[in-house]
Length: 123
Image 1 (spheres, rainbow, N blue to C red):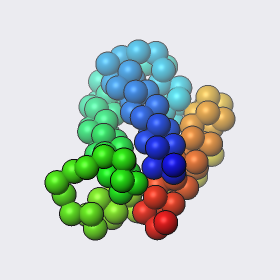
Image 2: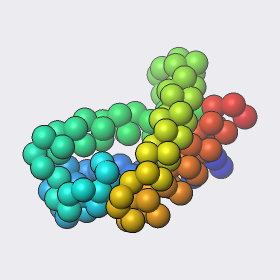
Image 3: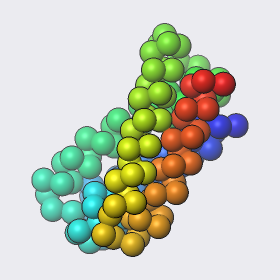
């Protein structure tokens, strides 16, 4: 259950990442919220994050026994723990954002996602 919720939340974040990477005007929800459309150099960083987000989704689904992968379970569990901490840090950063959209939309998503990744890794 936690793995599915975590994957869905991170999936929404991944879709947002992809949309801002290709230049849609949703930048106020991400990366500090300063830019409605991300500048090119920030789009490159966003695109890189997209790849890591896919890895996180696959890992949480694997550790939650929703999908099967040919990687060591301990590695995927470690990835879940890493992203649990990443999302917890992201929660704090979102709380400090000057963008109300990032603060009030992304903060709760990151916190719930963090809880789901930790719960999947440790339960």
